[in-house]
Image 1 (tube, one colour):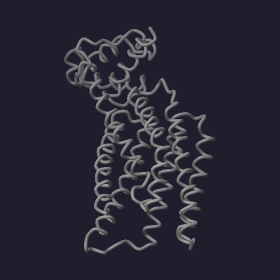
Image 2 (cartoon, rainbow, N blue to C red):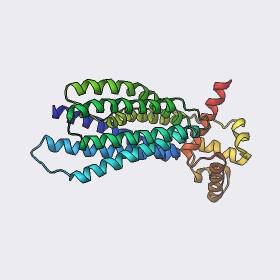
Image 3 (cartoon, rainbow, N blue to C red):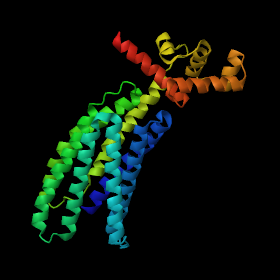
Image 4 (cartoon, rainbow, N blue to C red):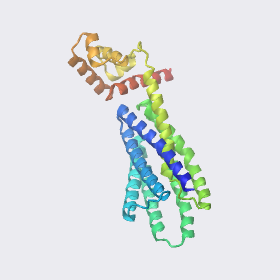
Length: 306
């Protein structure tokens, strides 16, 4: 059975690596607080999963080296607190009105996990702990379900389309996973397999699949920008773009570099770079990819409202 559990963790770790890399790449393109928080969350979960993988490997080999109990407990506390605090920041970033609900839910889940850990190390009756642990699992699942609801209900039209899709799809996967997890863990508990796969690792697996899919869609959207695509007048008026800056944006969309823009418009490289910098400031973007994505997102939004 240990080998099967080790394989499951390796599989989830692989998906987590893909998801973490995809999230980091999205963050370099979008440069949002949301993607920054999710990047840290993925990396911490990936570190935790890697730590568990090492422990499982040691259990299935002749090597018996392990970290001291105090170090293991300290790492577990650090990981749990980091994940829950990052989750709070994500919920607030999704909608500032979630602040009170997010604070209450985060405080409650931290308290529940603290009580659970205390009982695990101090309760002598295993049967009583297993009974209480089932209640804890249902509470954690309810917490995840609440996160899923808040994420799925995201309403941030000013966001990049990729970020919006990512949050909604991650919310949907959490809504599906949360109730199933309680049932599955209760079932496993009856057969003595309650500590096989952590809920955190299943989350990073499901979220990793979502993020990698969103990244593929994001890159495909950028790659489909036609060479004749022009910035629409509504975009120009919304962000106060000048006539010369519009010409620069048109060339950016077509994939021109600053040097090529200067040659095309008969201006110096420095002037072209200054125009690009002003465009970034006016549109609230930080990169060419983010600017092109915003142009496409604005166009899709207007077409959807027609």
